[in-house]
Image (cartoon, rainbow, N blue to C red; front, side, top):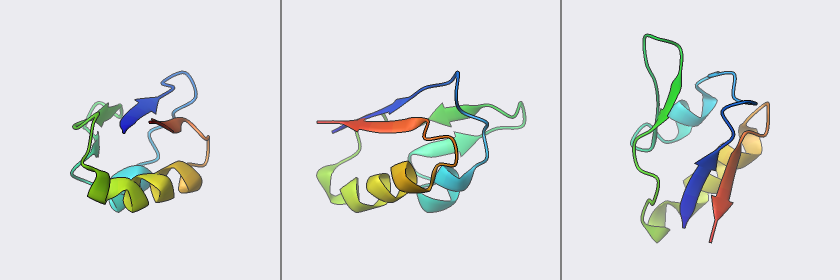
Length: 63
């Protein structure tokens, strides 16, 4: 699986970071960074939750 973020939509709300801090990080510059674009399959449930809870629907899973 691959995590894709539409940075034009992302507001860096950090909800995804609260769900998966090993994958998402909002830094002091208020931008979201994807720390691991290809998390292991055992992280799929958390990634799906991040996709669903993103208020701007800026996160997607490919594969």
